[in-house]
Length: 103
View (cartoon, rainbow, N blue to C red):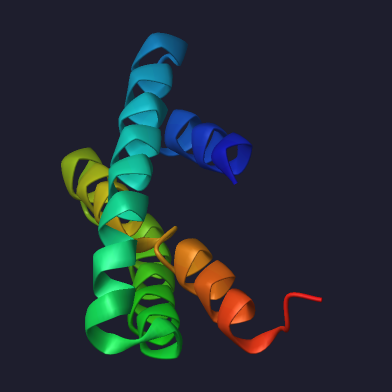
């Protein structure tokens, strides 16, 4: 995904490699922090609800990236997506741990 995003941002907005690297580094940091928040969300609303309520909007934000009129708004959509895109991973792992017997 990051390779495709890098290619697209380079072709569409003519971003150089150093700016692309910084932008992707920020998205990874945002995703990491959101993973920590996901556990709190799972305990508040449940694992399945967390998976649905974070996965669907993150894909919607991903679809908005190419139709944004400016580079800044495209990057903001990417950052928004990164803030919730990985929240379904801890929720899915928690759900599997609840459903599958330990033996």
